[in-house]
Length: 219
Image 1: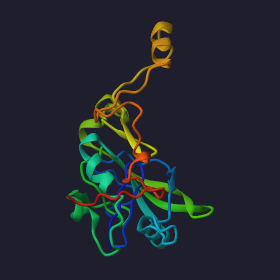
Image 2: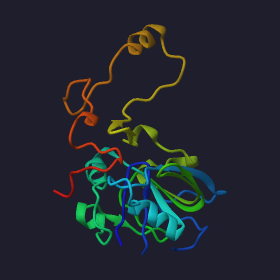
Image 3: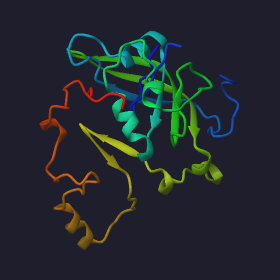
């Protein structure tokens, strides 16, 4: 089966160590937390369901990976509409790691990964779904796990999805900020790491699909 992977979303598999014992790189046991995933569920034909959603629906489990800047290109290309029998980890050169509670693999080297079991699936007509899951196991990369259970957020290097684009979390602050700084930032446009014009949008290109799929597959 294929293993779809998307930043901040799910890796799923139709393919565990102890459920509650702590293991290296895993956070101490706590009551399960809730995690919601908004999944565009239809392929670009607006008829066929995406493998990610089908696998989650059929297996009742998934993994949410926090993606770092070093993995973002491969994860972006995982939105290509592969045939159902393709293992996307292998096709894209992403290293997989076994999960401990669920059968779906996680992305090796991801700063944080959350093994989840489905709690409920809420249809969002016409074709989308919101998947709510219970987090059964957290995995935190060893270099990010600080004494007392705190995460070294300054070393996370996390990437977030902004519609058809991405944003690197590369600044952190507490409030209040100096008023002069706030005023200077209110009207400022975000800098682009890809050196494109600040008003560029992939939505204006042939690569964009309303389904969220990319037309660029493995290199």
